[in-house]
Image (tube, rainbow, N blue to C red; front, side, top):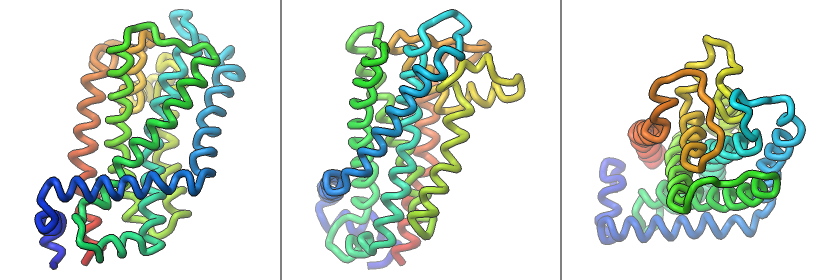
Length: 278
């Protein structure tokens, strides 16, 4: 089988779309089964997220007043959720690089399975992994005083938007994970890319507090639009420095960002996977 046959040919020999979906779910289950075997990964991810909640809620919260006098803890928690989801790509990057280094992807390629299963299985498992982190974070948020002030439909819509964003970010991780040589490099790349995106945003502070030249960048940042969307859906404080699409239609803009990320990084990830399969 040639690389040009790629994903489609291998999928066709195993039942077309159904076969590819079945293989993807099997790989997803394989990835999820690794979590209990390496509990330190989930434990430290949870502790890191809880640390951000406690630090900003109790240490910095009193020093960061909101322009409208709103509750900072309610303002903070949607940002923490968005930050955690944004880091989904780092999880995927490290996982893909680790599988490459250990030869696991080579073993998958030798099996009679859809090649797409390696990528879809990884992204779907990381979405489920991040859903588990969100549950822990929400319980932590409730403990420090965060509440959802809207109904169940809005709450579920917010959760769905977060997980859809996690799916998009995981495809960035797929491409990065297949492009770097070692796990150590993957960790550094993930941190270097995501750190400015999450901090030059409205996650921890209102954009009104930022310099004028930096404010538009922060407001159009996909992490900012996701955070603003969740605040709107859940009735949490959502101050904005200016009018415009990010302020008036954050949900629409977030969906556009998700579509753009998928349109760019799904083909890049698939292309990179085909290149290493030759």
